[in-house]
Image (cartoon, rainbow, N blue to C red; front, side):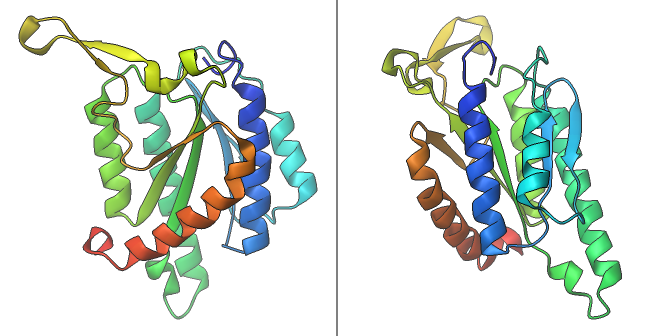
Length: 204
């Protein structure tokens, strides 16, 4: 849908801006993956992230996968983050890997048509593991095509019901992005909220 909705170019610009900002802030190891019906690691944890490796990662995005398997994506992300945390812990004699806090930006047009409750469960599982998933929704510049205008169909008790698309949205943390100039501020605000969440019982 990223290709059909012409959101791919904006998503790549957002990814480039995001990785540059995170790299400058020295938040730690950075990994980049692509996803659809399959999940592909384009830049692994543990490898230094640079402008050259960032450009190489961007060049691998084709937006040719037909569907997005959201549950598979989140399961793979959680496994990757757990492995990265274990690797960091094994390298640290002080055991600081156990205190590792991990942040994930998922850049997508957010067309989640599958079992939303299962996706929500994976989001809760990630949060339980001190992994914060933030969905950056690449929205249409046309207000008529905005995700805020979308409707979805539900059949509670076998009866047709048309609801707002974002009603019961499975990602508890999401940002609707239309203007890339907002992204640096969004990153800074997200990191601030991330550190605030660290102090709450959500990460206990």
